[in-house]
Length: 536
Image (cartoon, rainbow, N blue to C red; front, side, top):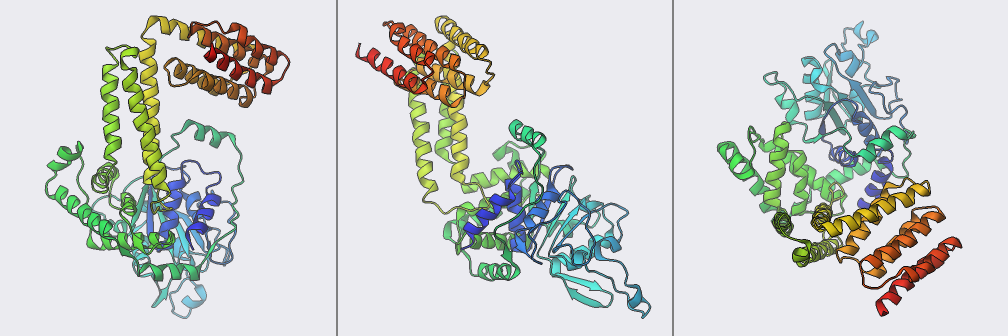
């Protein structure tokens, strides 16, 4: 009912955002749950953009587009903020800038009220940047709004329509300033980091994107109320209930016995957080809303992974909470075993030949492949949470990295043999020359061909598979015809060097096809050549 709609909204809101999908999901969840979220991170990491975009998922005043989403200043035009208020706090900020100017006409009647239209008291969603730099007067009023959804305007308590508030800062609240209560109300917390992936960084600086976002679907405020009502009927299944209790018990024990933090998790200089009963209750409410939005009426054990964004107080505690959750919720023991096997094999490879370890390499690779298939099947049968990455997908990523590490280790072991090393160096040099001669600077294709050749020599790829791989690089790499010719020659030489039969004559068919610019024929002739070789 809701899940498919949310997935479509997330896909539309994520356009042009890089490495911010998880943050966007959590901000959106906080708004659905009517809770506050704290985004911790340096300036310029798209925190305000994410808050604005997330608010677009809700039809407050018929909003489908918010202009100038990079701005942290509110438009302050009555009825024009489309239910969203944004402000960059500083130590000189005044209540007038957040809650609205004094109404002079009412002041003349001895009524101290404000013109709140277009300011925080009339907003459905808000973003307050550099939250801890604001004055106590503003923060105290803000605490009342968050706690009770009430704004005291003169002598009148006004019910505010606020559904969600996003607070941001590159620092944590200073100690002994009376800010603990406000910080505790920020139930979700997320660490926003600068871009880490090189490709994402290049996309960011290279592409001009339309900052405006149009959504094909939105949620009405009536639907928001309906979701909260439905969430009250959600319950924990037995495994989730037990795991939640274990998480609380372990954090309490770590607070009572700080030495266990180093003993169990190897972390130093970290203290366990104090988590109030109220905070645990609010975390449970968010988990219930999350279940409803995933079209479920129960919370399953995997859902508790969301607590990684609720139970820490400072940067040091993030890793501790992550490790506590891994211990309780379970990190796949089989993957842990595969990693241990790889480490042992990596150590053996330092003093043993490729030939003596080939069987062990193949066995470990088969186990990794089998585990990947098992996890793929689990994805289709296990309840998932749209606000979390699949646990299985995270595990598959770990396995992929493990397989890459195994390939590298196996290649390095192969190259320890001087004969193999010289042969592959010759092959690599020819690849480089082929590409240079055709004016193609395609590092991806070079890497693909090198990997295929390594796999061929290591017995992971047969003649037929090698021919197909080289042919696919020729076709999909968009290379010039003389590159195809070069690969045809290279293929013949590689197979010839790795067998007792001379395939240069058979490979001439591929060369002829390349010269006639018939790439389909080239592919067929390459495959025919290896099949003839096998018969011989």
